Length: 343
Ligand code: KG4
Ligand code: ZN
Image 1 (spheres, rainbow, N blue to C red):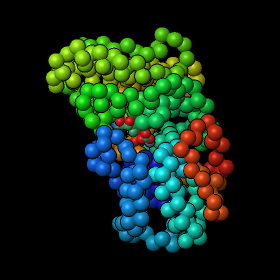
Image 2: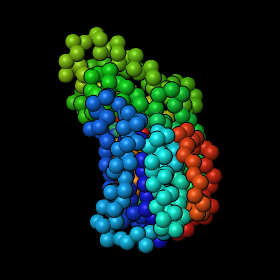
Image 3: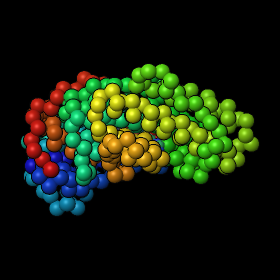
């Protein structure tokens, strides 16, 4: 069985082929960064139009590249939410049309479940139960994961998501879009003793986060400098240190509360090297196992969607009505109906 995965929830068009026994066969990703960079952020209508233009040619290219005939595909999986409604509708309607044409079932996938399970594309893979830290452009959550679809939200951001905080801070520092990776790049050259930012909410019990106050700190610190490249790097570093420290403290707390010994990082911000390295050091020190996907599967991609669908075959649908869910709490998912053994 081969699953075609489609991802179009935001500004990345992704297609992937996942074989139930052999694992990931291949994937393609097209980033719309250049389209949106002119506007300093994602323009939803442009994102939808770009997905329309790219998606079918990318499916054809991937099938050609992998020498797979459409008749060999057993399921089409697509991101049904959360995300931008127009962008989601493009992926969902193309996926459903392909499934209808090929007379095979389609599977609607939750984007954050795709991220959450992505570390299982790697070897060694985590095994249930584990604590997942989901950090993306729209989400910051600590989740106790007992199985596919068995998610207990332990804590989440009360305001800005971690990725959103990176993006907004980058903008304040004049770094443009996409901000997170740009900020991380210059933070690597910053002096961590030049500024000190607070670690929000670490002195309170619980596992919730709040990152929005760091923007004010960035703004006041930035205004007090001569706004040169050195102060830019130092402030970026102070911001990144504050986010990484806060996340580290909460992850340790979540592991302690659950008694689990595995921590999984997923979502765009898990691509952050400083975060990966800090948590790796803490994992070695405290004796828990740390998992995160390869860099290209931390951020949006279709490999994670096709892979998640391999656990969701029991949710495959043959009828042709579909919905997308721009807002879709992870906690609303039901446990997977069946768990076929796959690679
Ligand atoms: O998962 P993702 O690709 O899309 C969403 O589902 O939101 O995450 C995108 C977010 C953006 O906010 C981006 O700035 C952030 O992940 N991001 C990073 C890094 N790479 C991507 N943040 C910090 N450091 C990075 N290296
Ligand atoms: Zn994402």
